[in-house]
Amino acid sequence: MTKKQTIFSAIQPSGELHIGNYLGALKNFVELQDKYDCFFFIADYHSISGEYNPKEKSKQIFDLALDFLAIGLDPQKCTIAVQSQIPEHTELAWIFNTVTPLAELQRMTQFKDKSQNQDQNINMGLLDYPVLQAADILIYKAYGVPVGQDQIQHIELTRKIARFFNNKFGETFPEPKDLITKTPKIMSLIDPTKKMSKSHGKKSCIGINDEPEMIKKKMRKAVSTTEYNEDIYSFYASLLENFGTEKNKKYFLEQFKNKDIKFSELKDALAEDISNHFKDFREKRKELEKDPEKVKNILSEGAEKARVIAKKTMREVKEKVGVIMG
Ligand code: AMP
Image (cartoon, rainbow, N blue to C red):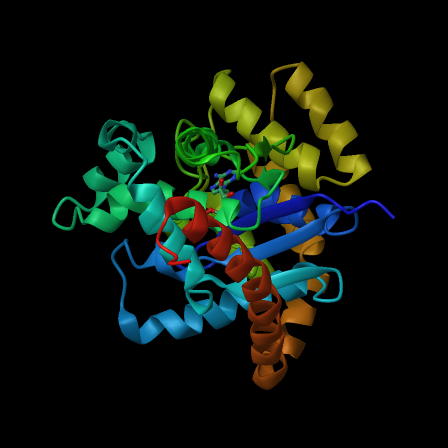
């Protein structure tokens, strides 16, 4: 039997997941677990480079584990683990720091955006984030990384870091591909020129765990227009494509074609379709929440499995770098 190729991706535990995270990443995770050897991580060390409350972090980690499991990630098929539980990730990141030019990190658009959003806390972690991300991916020698569009630049840098390392120390790491979904960038509910993001506030996002009433409320407050507007039209078209029932798709796409959309009607229909799409997820999540021990066990078993590979890669890296005495 040929060995399955490895997939790695991670999400930060930094608040509720939104439908952008779902369409850009999570939905793809669920599909990939059947075909590949998948590692899906909760990137807690990444998340502490942003503003956060330490008292809330462990709940955020637990909540993200619930999201992973309730959406359909199956620990029998894939490895689910928490980044900080495998210290080899940060160890490898240090070694990668020594082959990564500072200028590569300074030009990252996410670093620039985040520095603007938290201008009183431009910490080294914010700058070094893509190096730790490269270590996360390369420690498992991943072939592919399912991510949203905002991460493509980081994956490109991961490939460069693999090259920098290989050139200096000999062929060790593969150059991973980004695996993009057909909707790699969902826009904000209140400003369709910006991506949907937790950092733009809850009003800009529909949470995958939002109750139907909340979804309806947020949808009703979402942008609309009396004249044709490309950004607004394509925003609603992408929601319809991904969540609409066949009947609603047919009915509203006709309105789109005629450039005559009845927004109040469309928004209520979409709210209902999105709520229904995540109905099973919400129920499964509530069930799982009652059994925190089960969730914690899944995470520790995942960490154990991941650590075996991470240790093996680190041993190889240390030998190549010359820090193991013969
Ligand atoms: P993060 O919150 O940065 O950990 O993002 C988790 C995953 O969701 C990453 O793969 C992102 O690329 C993806 N993602 C975040 N926001 C969006 C969005 N608005 N549309 C599509 N994908 C997104």
